[in-house]
Length: 457
Image (tube, rainbow, N blue to C red; front, side, top):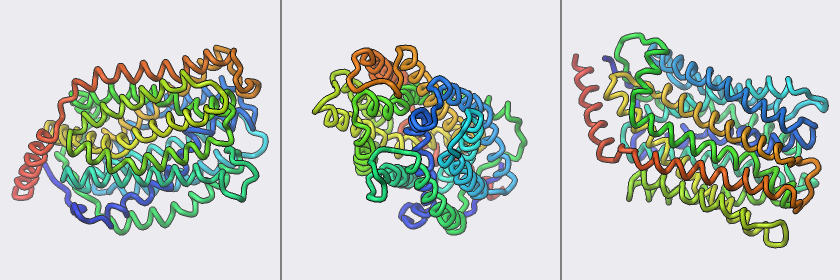
């Protein structure tokens, strides 16, 4: 067994932590449109049918099912050969800018094939960037406190990217505060200008981290076997899948429901902006809660917040007070998102350490590849199912009028009831999670002892 140690970030090295996370803001500025408003823009402004958009979502996730674990396996394989994570991050970041341009600034006449091709290109670039960046963060430190700090800062950069996108429509250069094709063009232009220097700073001013390699070459099948026999990870998978499906339904339908049914399309940017600000400000709370009560309790609390916020629109009808209650609901969901951004990557890193200790091989990229796959697949399943539900009940964003009673049942079922049930079921699996701070500390000490023996051998 060999340990590659190319330098690590110290617990108080805030400059290094921020440098590592700089590209994330640009990446999420590019990612936010495809997750929230792109389906509405393509349906409303480019005439793509909801059923066709749903098909693209499903096919994209099938594509991810193949590419995510393959990218994770190859990234770990090249890391073992001495090629660090930075080069993969650079390739993925540049790919995001290129594919994002064609996806967000399309010609006036586009086909479903155009939408499909550039969606797949975008998700492939996202997979390369996101998996490599998360795996790199796991290798930068084994210190639990520093690890939570690193991923909390990463979460803050996610919100910086999101807020940068949400604030665009309210700028005076636009004639309306609604999200439009012009908004997307500005988003990809700003992200492209920002991304290159951010990538260069991260690649040249942040250490490569520590990588543990057993010295034996494993097939992708063997990788799957070792990862999927990690019991804490299997439980994590079940929780994450259910959470992603519920969140995917909500994310994909928010723009359509708020705009077409509640008639507050001009306020969506403001709602998302305020929600992101609250989410970013809430990161210290989740850091405190995690350190005080543990990551399991933090995640459970976040799930309960989501269930309550999903339920709020059940009692909201279009009218004078709709904006206020929908704002409260959205802010609550964005606040709970701070747990996923700051706490969950640290929990998964602890699970990676457990796998490294048990199987003798650092497969951080493979774990985060599957995590990324779960996120996109579950959100895609949720998004497609939510869109299909609206379509089945006759909800058409192009013809539905504000307060249409025929659309109310579709909104209640797809936007509220189904996400509530799915996330509630995830709490049953969360109760079985056994990785604690004490377990993580023991594993970390054993890994350090193993690395020391390896260096002396």
